[in-house]
Length: 412
Image 1 (cartoon, rainbow, N blue to C red):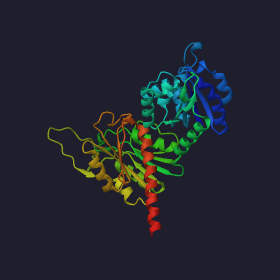
Image 2 (spheres, rainbow, N blue to C red):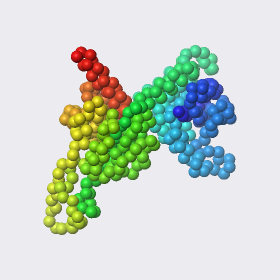
Image 3 (cartoon, rainbow, N blue to C red):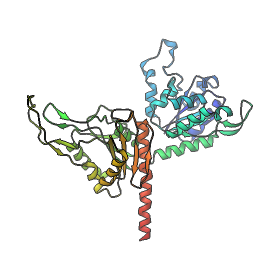
Image 4 (cartoon, rainbow, N blue to C red):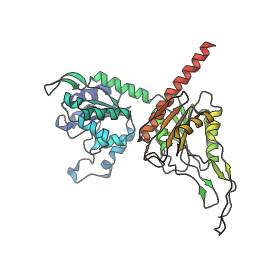
């Protein structure tokens, strides 16, 4: 597995050299990204010699030869796509603040925003800086987003003070890395079927009825499930999105086609996450020729489409089934009704009228309504982070349901 190690500007930067060696001994490939401050303490050559990998120091590469090239300008995207975990050790108060506030002014901060990989941060700084309300608020914010923080150790600090602020021990950091990666592969052996995007319901050769779904949420779920070790089958309506790495994709157009694709693949799935915005109705008649404009009102008759969620959940067996509810009012009430009516295990509901939560946004604000009665309201998060939370809840809920089933068997 590949770890990207961010090294920032603090006295503890020299300890990152030994950390590279320890990670390599553990079987990891390590690529180092250094901030400008880190280079005041340790040279890039040190890490290049230890890791055997290119050390990245600038967002736009070395400009001494006449400026950046296209490859260096998009390198943060390439690194983001191939890393399995981003580890920052040591992490200064400055880098923690930038991560928390979404500031991207160098390679490491830009990489953080571009990556969907799990993040582990090991802070190291003066005790007063660590205890400052601003730093603690930033740490709390990152933890809420799913970032793992390896708390600094207490002891004598380079500044002469004593207290919390020393870089955590390497054993503690490596344990945290392994725990996160183990958790991130918790869907190994599962096959996850995901639906995404809208459907197009043809009215005539020119016109069709659809909705505003971009498919971004479903694609984020598919990518996250693949990162966590699952075999992922993505049944997609018409969208302008690239297929996530390692995901098998089947393209469909209409609700009828999506239904057929799901039925053909559902038997292999241990988890079904039906995020697509499938049309509830389609025109009763599809005209062979374009409907001409006239002066009289036009009346169109509709028929209901197959309820894919209800059909999948009807005979789900041990399969976990997740549905989505895009609401404009009474979100909790409608989501709970849908959870029961469809026999789903989890409903992901949102108010599409809320700012940052509607269609085609990169963010979402959702509440997860679970079969065991738990309601989990999430703040506004990037859709990749929402996807991770959904999968976290799927794993948790599966454990609860399996435990309940085992208890019933024991009672019998």
